[in-house]
Length: 113
Length: 111
Image (cartoon, rainbow over all chains, first blue to last red; front, side, top):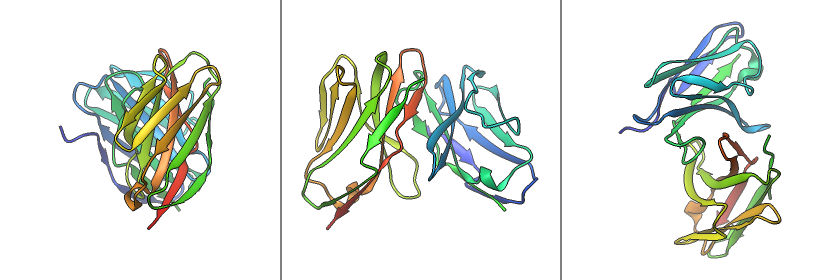
C-alpha cells in the first residue's frame, strides 16, 4: 500500500475562493481523520469518519468547512469561502482502530492570500 | 473532552545526552498513549505507544513510561543523535473516543 495519499501538496488561493482537499486512506482502514496544523494551535482534529460515516465534527471551525467521504477510498475537505486565517497544513490520517496507530498523509500546505 | 499538556515546548541537548519530554492528561479513562515524531516539512509518524495496563515500554533508544495515578507519561530518548531532531507530539485517547494531541516539543540535538 502506498500509504495515505493527499492532494494537492500545496494550494495557494485568494480569499473567497473555494478550496477542496483530497485524501485516499490506506485500504482496510475503517477510520479517517482530518487534522489542521498551525504554529499557534498545533494539531487540531477537525472531523473523523468511521466506515464513511461522519462521527464527530465538533472540531470543524465553522460552516465554511465541510467534509465528505462518499466511499471507503476517498474523502474531501472543502472550505468555501476561504479566508487568510484558514492558512495551515491540513493532514488526513487513517487507522484500523479508532484513534490508534494513525498513519498520516503528506499534508496539504494551504495558503489563502 | 481530553486535555493533554506537553512540556517543554523546546528542548536542546548535546549529541549523546538523553532527552525527556513529559505529558499530562486530564481524563482518567484514557487508555492509550502514543508518541509521534514530525521532522521538518514531513508528516507525523508514530514512534512508540503504550497502553494503560503497562508501566513502561522500550524500543532501542526510545522508551515511554506511564504513571496512571499521576496521569502523566514521558518519552525518553537516550544517546541522542542529530537525526533525532524533530517535533515530538504526545497524545492520549479515551476508550471509544478519538485521540487528542499535545502542543509538541521541538527537540534539537547539537552535534
